[in-house]
Length: 196
Image (cartoon, rainbow, N blue to C red; front, side, top):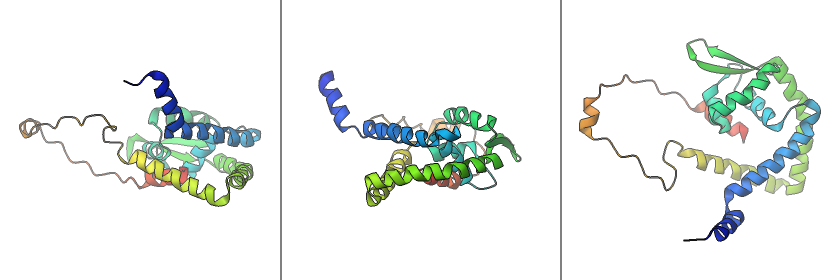
């Protein structure tokens, strides 16, 4: 059995998650600092942009959560200050009161417009520091990481056993469920692409 010190050194030096989270915190700090004059955080701008790229018809909360790779509870909590500030509007879907739709308001549009030159200055700095080719390659690679990590979210995590299959007899004893139409995942996919 490996001892904790060896395990800790290996994780610290080799773990992809450790590196990505450190890089994420460092970049978030950099973008937050540039957006400070607007009273907007980089994570909030990311949410506004994700909603904006989904169009005037709004986006389902579930699709936005999938696109931003966030759980719904965390996303809902993070949307509250944006809604209170008048940057977003949350409404029930007209055809299904259980579904919440998120809309960008005119004030939200103005916030993105005001943030753009500040974001652009920081983005230019990051590209210059990394080199344009490396910055583009990093963005593409991180997109691949998101795809790889979210592709099998319905499957058990690596190393976790598959749940046992139910027998045919057990399935046939249960009443048949009515088939539900499959929901399109294109808004989630579009939000995820735009968020990366």
